[in-house]
Image 1 (cartoon, rainbow, N blue to C red):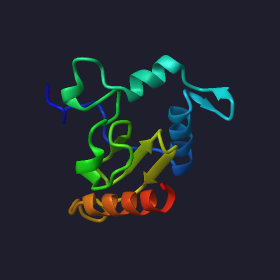
Image 2: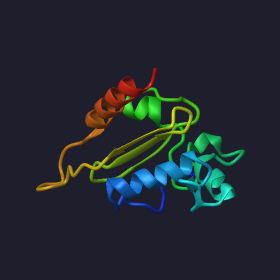
Image 3: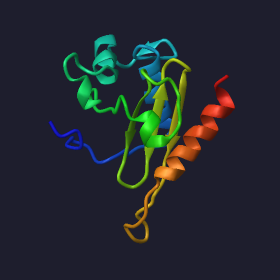
Image 4: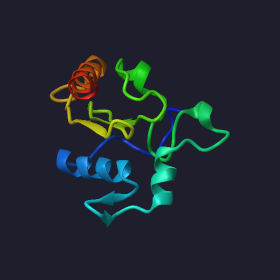
Amino acid sequence: MNRENSGNSGLFSSAEDLALLAAALMNGGQINGVSVLGKQTVEAMTTMPRGFEHIGRSLGWENDAMPGKYGCMLHPTRTFSHTGHTGTAIVIDPVSKLAIVLLAHRVHPEDKGTVGDLRAKVCNAVGAAVIE
């Protein structure tokens, strides 16, 4: 199976909404005591299926990409992330209860360049600032 073949094109929302999604995923599907996702849904979204760990993905998330892809070390076995073509990224570390949302637009005015270094710098800076 090709790990680059998935039905997505990025993150399309506001930072506030993505923070709420991250909070729900880190809290078993609840936000402020209100259930917005079922526990089994959260498990399916954040855990790689048995026998498919080599793919490195759960339902819509990359589960093994953090150390190599962004250059930062949050919790190496529980962190999951999602990126987008335009440079967006959301990284969720449920162990540290940390979510990083980066809404970038690298394709304007021309579809050139990369944001891999920026993603790594943001992740490292935030991780270093809040994780002891």
